[in-house]
Length: 231
Image 1 (tube, rainbow, N blue to C red):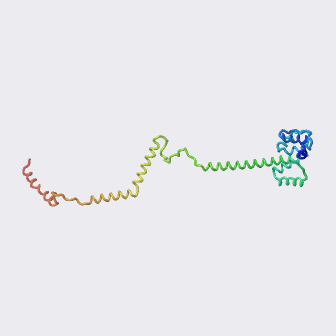
Image 2 (cartoon, one colour):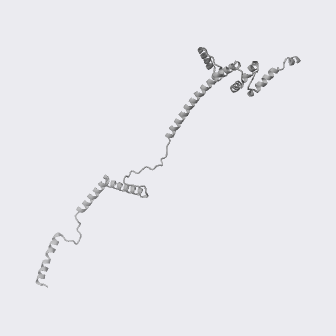
């Protein structure tokens, strides 16, 4: 039991310093002349923004011997291993070499431009779709259409009355000129003609033509008597 306890070595002062630096890495800035051995253990725990901040804050010292490999790993993590291998092949083919922090920043700008183009395209499509939907909506017309009656003028209170009276007259004339009304008028006229052609019915007490002729001959003696006795 005592042998197991004594076999565990306590952390060294260097390990304690490195662990303390890692725990407070968000406050890390200018590393100055810190040994590369320490930076190789501390900087891999940085995020993209933290690593960028350390490089910008450190003046008069090139940290690329350590950070270049870290930027390559960040590039691969962000954009994939296939894209990373493609960049390596292109640099070998063209016999050029770029730092991976430069390649990372360039790729970010390329992605931002592509995303902005896609965003603008989507915005334009949404605007066109909204315009199409609004054009198909039913709109209430508040403007009163002008009357088709050319003879009437003005918009006063008597305007509608005149238009209605003219419309009633026209309807009445069209009704009187219709085929049904003409047939009814003809039938009525025919029935009236039949009623006038029926001979009159003799009433009791009336005289026949012979009686009237004989009665017209009776006044002659009276005329003679008047001649005999003039006044």
